[in-house]
Amino acid sequence: AQTVTQSQPEMSVQEAETVTLSCTYDTSESDYYLFWYKQPPSRQMILVIRQEAYKQQNATENRFSVNFQKAAKSFSLKISDSQLGDAAMYFCAYETWNYGGSQGNLIFGKGTKLSVKP
Amino acid sequence: DVKVTQSSRYLVKRTGEKVFLECVQDMDHENMFWYRQDPGLGLRLIYFSYDVKMKEKGDIPEGYSVSREKKERFSLILESASTNQTSMYLCASSLATRGEKLFFGSGTQLSVL
Image (cartoon, rainbow over the protein chains, first blue to last red):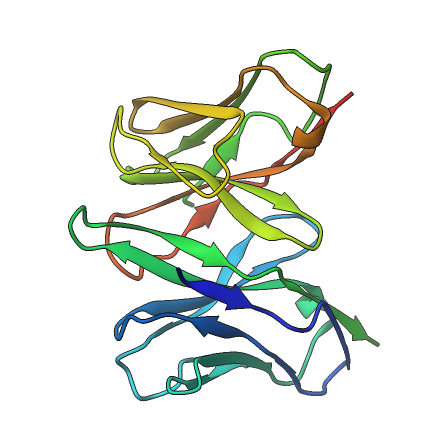
């Protein structure tokens, strides 16, 4: 069964600095999707970034980028120029997919709480 | 703006009560999900549905059931609420395509006393 591990329950970063959140996963599949979701204090989960395993290039979205190491099964999130609004819970997720039924769902890690200091 | 709406933001119920959590999406999504979120445990899948009247068990279905009579609505039912079901419940929806992002509701914080 696939698993997702976030080893850092809490992280802290100074405003304008860079922080990296770690995520490792376990799977025997060769093609899959990985995601980072953000949950601010408002509780509304939103997608930060997504990566398809077959794509060599690391995904980027403005100040957010990933370091995807397929062989190591590692998918870390880098936040550059951290802002106060980046303070939130961050969840790494792996998409499982049932090819026979064309359906899937996400397996989430336990989350990393990021604090941003002014 | 696309929306997933959960009927209650906070809910307080008594042990043994039957509890209904409602979720409605306005995006014509095929897939709908119910997750439970607990501190230190992340999100765990309770049930999901990929079509009307279809449902699949997730990782922790015990003590829960679901109903999807219409495409836009997915209900989570606690047949007899217990204190260990005190938690945050998140509903989500998505298209039935690989790699699609989930759209989440704002969550229902349920307390069972």
